[in-house]
Image 1 (cartoon, rainbow, N blue to C red):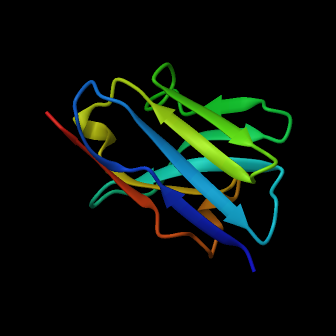
Image 2: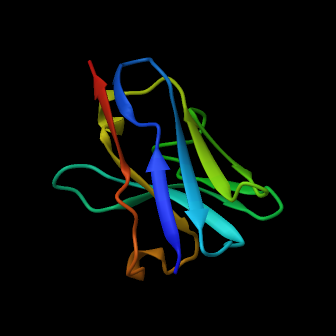
Length: 117
């Protein structure tokens, strides 16, 4: 039974930084991703990282400001977010990454990120 626990969110002013963590247990995935869902909006992809460390970012939202990393020994994925903007306000969730991520049944509770202007 896989379990995903996100943490590190909070309230920050625009221009600030946060580092999110996602601890996975029960299984190790070759590729992990971060996703977010803002109020009234669909869940969207933010960033992903493969076992070998190759990364992919959503160009619109994350490229240049966010950095995804992982500690395989700890089965933990991180998302360093810099220069945060009010439009980054959302619940951030992690999960395995694939082209069919929208069909995943299981998601953790996520961690709330709120950016004030």
